[in-house]
Length: 141
Image: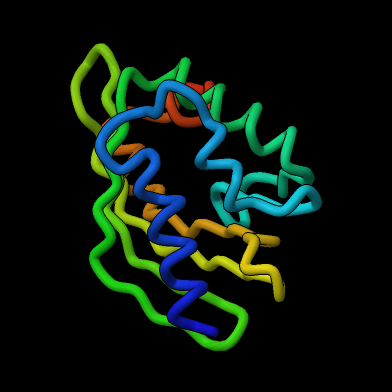
């Protein structure tokens, strides 16, 4: 079961690995209706439900001109898939490299029911600044 789940996760990541897809239909086909997505654990709140997750990804598509995702390592248990990735997001100012680890939990139907990402925020802030990442300036801190 773990190799099947690994392939599901790889297939989902592949939908946005070399740029944003035209539609999110294929991406979302791997995600359960009641899934939970937390983009930056523990900083951002979990997003609950397939429709809300789709909306979050669409928001990223509007914020970033393009996206790349390189899976550096993958491993799994019966219900969880762990990935180490290097994502890149392009803004008007250039590419931001985003090192992260993502943990996916899948159900018996091989649908993603939980997706948690742990990012190196320090690296992102150095590249984009606090105002771009969180909408605040360093003077506010």
